[in-house]
Image 1 (cartoon, helix red, strand yellow):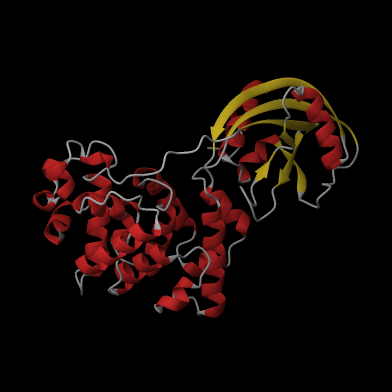
Image 2: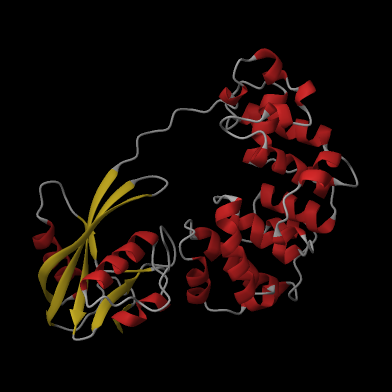
Length: 356
């Protein structure tokens, strides 16, 4: 495995220096994002926040903007909170002690083991999704890996196989094998360095049936109406609460439309109740579909005009009037970025500065 990894590892920026901060940022990004998608975000993020001190002392708004488009924003919020604690409590040095590093927000057993083994040379096995897949096929494990019994067995195998003294390289080799060879679909068994020992390859016509997973539940579907409310050359944006789904991001005011309810009528009433202002719904801008982890959304955007009233959110959430050209300076969920792009195409071809 180590020989194979030495010859076949991908050239990735976080592997070059093995800096604890770089390893940490990369591991957080890769929790829910593929390497090819995460890499440009990583490069921009590290350019903007080159050290843990830069990250820990930056405003959350800047961190969310740098993360914009990658999704799963709780990762960014936890990374920011953890960096602040590293600066305030650990003198800007990422702790090497397992208990202390595991106490930081967003760092669970897997992330802690990855940082400790790769950056600090600790003999800690890593069991991420790629490693689960490799071990499940290598040892023909048929239990759902999410079960406690299966997880205990996987952890035990990872400890048994770990190459002491080179745990970081071995962990990365296992993850690399799962990411590039022992893939979820159409694994390239002929190129696998451990295929002579793979029980799934020996006994199954299609090793990709492992690991076995429970069938996914059907996700609920929500219809959401959002208003791009204009006042002269400004538009109104609202910031979501820091905690919760899409916490700290900006969006256009609106809400979930009930079944059989007319979107335009709902929107005017909802914005009146939410912000205390009167609006006129002028026209539909775009209808967009977007999938989240636990639900799907159809977002209907409308161009609206401000008629009367001072905007104050009923829950105390921050709201601002900003120039349309400046929307790109604020962090929006991807669905709302697409709505901005659609609105820009309708209004004199203007494109918000800094939009993606």
